[in-house]
Image 1: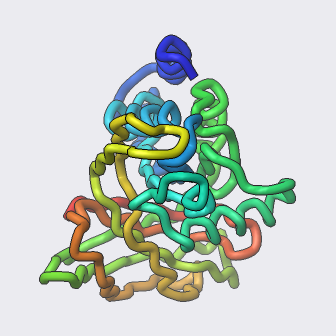
Image 2: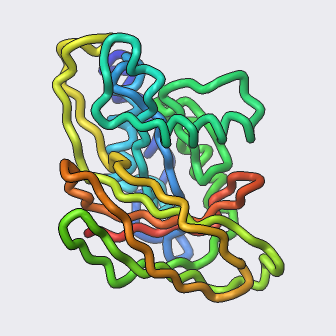
Length: 254
C-alpha cells in the first residue's frame, strides 16, 4: 500500500465522524476491543499497524473508547523473517475466529472488532463501519483495580458487574499484557530493510476462567511477563465462548 493510500485510509476514519470523548448525547464512551492479527514478515501489514496506532492514539470515532491489541502471528516466521513478537497463542486465537466465521483460512492483516467482525486491517472505511456497528451492542461494565508489578509478576483485580440481561449465561474472562510501543529493524523477508513500529503489542494473553454473567464477579489475577517487556498496559475482556462476541472490555495502564 502506498503512503497516499495510508493517508486516505486515515481520512476515511474521521470523514463525517465527529471526534470527541463522548457521544453526541453526552453518554460515556462505549469500549470496543480491536484485535489486529499482524506480522513483521508481511509487507501488507505496516499500513494496518499504522492505522491501529491512529485508532489508539487519536480515538477518532465519536462515542467509542477504542481498546487495541496487536497480536503477532507466527505462520509468517518461516518465510524469511522471524517476528520477535510472534506467538503461537495469537495464531491459535486467529484460527479460532476463522473457524467461528467459517472463513477459508487465516490472513494478515486482519482486524477483529469486538469478536464480531473480521475485516482487512488496513481498510479504514470498513474499520469505521465495523466499529460503529459494535457501538450498538450491549456491554457489561468491567473494572480493573489494584494493578501492580513486582519483577516478572503482574497482579490485578478484575470486577464484573452482574447483568440480568444475560441471566444464566456464562462467558470466559481473558487478561492480556501489552507493550505500549515496540520497534524492529527488519533484516530479511518482505519488509527487509524497514524499521517497523507497533502499538499495544500483546506479550501475554491468559484465559482466566469461566464466569457467570448474572452474578457480580471479582477475581484476583497474576500473570508472569517476559523479562524483555515493559508490560505497560493491561487489558481485561469477557468473551462468549460460542459466538466469540466480546461482552465487556477495559484497559488499565501499568
